[in-house]
Length: 118
Image (cartoon, rainbow, N blue to C red; front, side):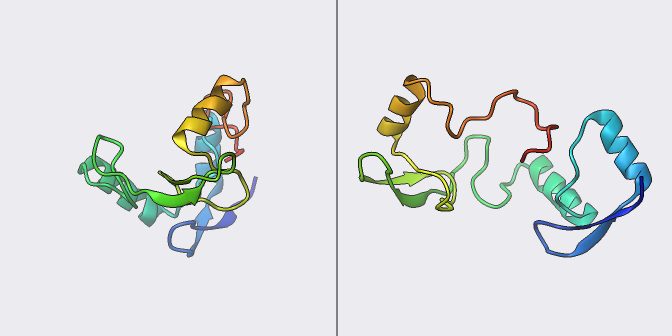
């Protein structure tokens, strides 16, 4: 295993993911980090201070909503994520219908974030 040069998804700077860090992450079942150490520390500090990071707080605070058009019924709606265009977006009624029909499109199975698929 050799050191890896990675690019931070937040600031765009390159950082080194050392061999010892890789071994530690692997032993804990963590996936490769997407953020540099500074951005990880800033995100952790923001989370621990109770403030929101990059939008609404997951602890009952205001949530940033984005406009979208439902892929099923065409109704204008708002969703709590930035639509990317590569997946359908549904209004809350159509989303419930999709979930109730057994469709697993858009859901993630396994519940583990260590699979490296994200």
